[in-house]
Image 1 (tube, rainbow, N blue to C red):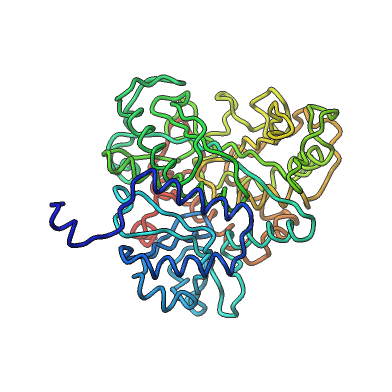
Image 2 (image 1 turned 60 degrees about the vertical axis):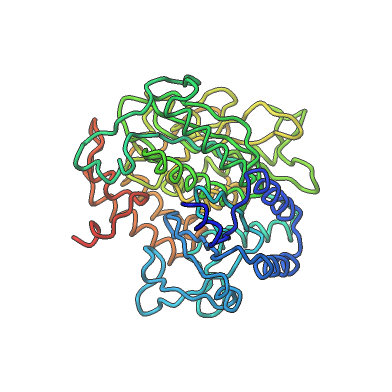
Length: 479
């Protein structure tokens, strides 16, 4: 854009250092549970005073975890922020046409400043909560369900639920590789190196570096990044966070990756197993519970140095492993990843060393003691993943499994088996409620029925076309 036009528009464009400072300050306020009223007042005042902001992007997620965005003119939002309505019948898994009116409430704590070169000048981002006609949190908005549960745990027990996710993905040639898969029948790598191998300036390294810079500016507090085992595979790690903030960061992470990849002429894909014959992508989910700053999963005298509470958490997770499997692995393609030939975490057991276990107990200390749920796929709804893991681990059925380290059961190897276990489970009805459970099951059934029942030895076009992250309304409406 010519400088004279940029000067005329005068929209907010901050340096990456300024963005990082603002986002880290907001993150610290959120971490310390700053007064909702005070944060709301401060955000509204900021939007009023900062004349260079033109619009506010409001995020929310549907039942399958697909991220939706609405851009509101700033002046309109300042007048109407407490009554933002939208058509819920247009969102898969939300509401029927006769009950379509829903509202968005601002979660002012989940407020982000984003780099103008990737998100556009003059915009800020905020996550919304979906509210039904009665004014209560909408049951199909799992972010709101997770937030309510986390707040209850803090209020009733003093628990803070913490999570960090290691999200793997692939970088493929072309800006729209997934949508064209049915034409090409293959994905093209941009890099054929392997674990930790990528030269400075090559396409994969450029993508990783650029994505890491954007994340850092948005307050992610990066830890490490590197190519993964498979060709063109990547992982960009960042710090622990309170559970709702952690889930928001998963959505932002994937959004940032896709935006950066598109700008560079590539596709960032979070299909769990887009290429047969190489390692798939996971979303290893690290969890812990703290109270008053003390890590309740740590016990220096405990087995593997974790506490009885942590082992009970493991027991409950393994007891309901098959029941919640489709919440952690929600697509036809996800069951290709649970192949034992590729370090698949499909064994319903816990281990400190065996990476084929559903749950791993990493080496830790008083600060870092945690559990790692390895069976999660990167296409799962992050709010549903963290809600189901924490609520199951804290409140689920307990079987008092005698040997948590011995694999006597395995996770489903196909979506139909996983769906059957989910439908039959009494625990998943308690977890989600009968209505939301039925809607979720119907979505998964519809997706499965559009794909070959048997996985076979290569990725089929419908697996990609009807994947919920490669959403194409035109295709769905042809049936």
